[in-house]
Length: 323
Image (tube, rainbow, N blue to C red):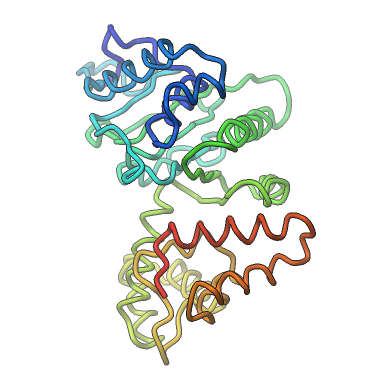
């Protein structure tokens, strides 16, 4: 089975064009605002938006072909979705998948991704084009990136370059962006350190990370004792006690569960914040205390302290934290 784009839409928007369209659809910027910012004619931006809407409303359908079971390079796959607005597209998640490292296991969970997920899959000639289960048409956008061979760690360098490009393009966007590197290669850790004051970067073994986090948050909020937590995790991981134990230890060591009083708010994305911020959240009773504690937390950052505290405060409120 092979997925191809409909002929009339075989030339998808470039990444730069897509970023500008997303900026417009996120709200807060008019065509004229984008003209001033990017120097691109209103009529041109309007045509991109129209093309994007048309593309999403006439998304590709699988074409039966028993001779093929993979995607063509540079295909972009989408399922019909509603146009994303400020209310249903608050955060865009960019997944950068090192297919050479994860192989098909890294694609686990792709069926759970949503229209605000954009997946870049990096592969080389050594691994060939990734194979997908086309019975589950993903709602996300998928962009295949075949990397150039010839040097050691070529894929790593190109994935890192793509990450830097995306961060630069989204730095002033009117929507939040987060980046997830899907790989078991811990060498990417330097990227998180390098961009820590600018971008939200995390790591995952596969594309199921967000769905797993949501499920675990639900478990934490529903159990009352550590024993119940342990048993619930074992059930969730289908009796994989090693995986359940690893998650259990992480929850306990990061104080994400307290049997004496509720410590987790259902639906709040704790995974976006480090343990020190989570500790602050659990200690404050109102927005004033939160703001003061954040200012104190970032005081060692000099002139950036106020800016970092303000950004974190607004992120917490926008993510739904209730006092």
